[in-house]
Image (cartoon, rainbow, N blue to C red; front, side, top):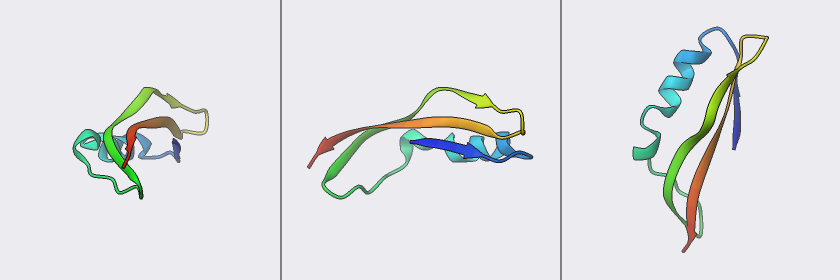
Length: 61
């Protein structure tokens, strides 16, 4: 999944969204979420926003 956080405060919002990501629980019907992580490095855009990707390892339930 791709995310884009509009600037000012984008770095702080990113930290809040991703700091406990691997400990979070996700409910996806028919899937068991084994792991979730930020994929690659966040990208700082010209308009002050921050873009990043999250990947999830899922197993069909």
